[in-house]
Image (cartoon, rainbow, N blue to C red):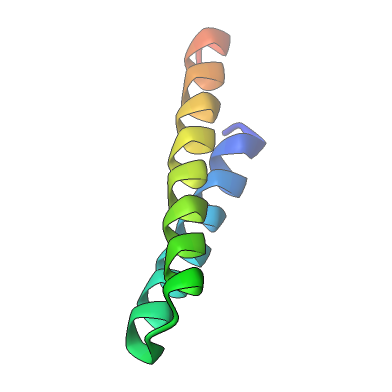
Length: 57
């Protein structure tokens, strides 16, 4: 498993938490940062998956 997949998954979790907390407390900036982190995590996870595929794992 590529490290990008691990880091990407962690970013997705962090982003989800930030998004939920931002919504709960009414902090639009935190909510937006969470959405951005979540999107970055999805992309990084996809890149890691592609690397794994190219390596034949």
